[in-house]
Every structure is written in structure tokens, then in C-alpha cells.
Length: 115
Image (cartoon, helix red, strand yellow):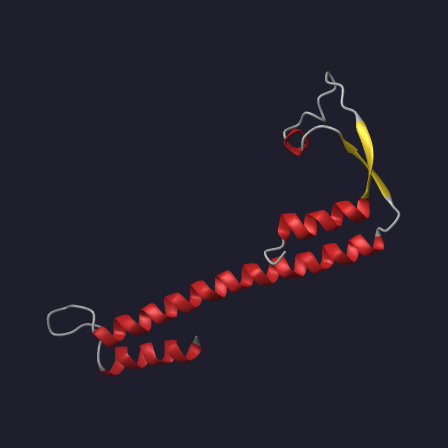
């Protein structure tokens, strides 16, 4: 990225950004487009790298949680997040689930692009 930015700066200093008609020069436009494309690819790669790191951490936690149970509401997950559980007027039932399997499921299905 730095090299492309240096080239763009050189074009500005030596060749100018615009031609005699005031239009952006071809070379200036192409280098600018390359910088923008590289920045987009870098952003996409950063998201993939973060997802990968999360998956690795979740899988490590899943291995560490082997044999542990967790009590979770029997309601659909949407209801967990909308405040239904906090509503004292509604009966919410809980069931025990294997924490290791839950974390592995989240890693494999909920976060990972690769699986």
C-alpha cells in the first residue's frame, strides 16, 4: 500500500493529477483505483482473520468445557435477546445442554466461513 501511495504522490508532483482539460489523468486514476481496491481487500481479509481467531478461541473453549453443562432457556434464541427472559410475568423454562457441544456448534456454524 505504501508503494502505491508513493507512486500516487510522485504522479501528483511530476505529472499532476489532471490533464490540460481538467480531467483526472489515466495513470493517476489507475493508481488511485489500485489503492482503493487494496484497502477493500485488506478490510475483507481483516474480517476473515478476526473470524478465524474467534473460531480458534471458541474451539479451545469447547475443548476446555468438556463435561460441563449449562442451563439455557427452552425458548427460541430470538426470545433470549428480546427481553422475554427478563419479563417476570412470563414463565421461562430452562434445560441443561452440553457446553462443549454448544461452543463447538457456534464456532462451526455461527462464526466460521470455512466449515
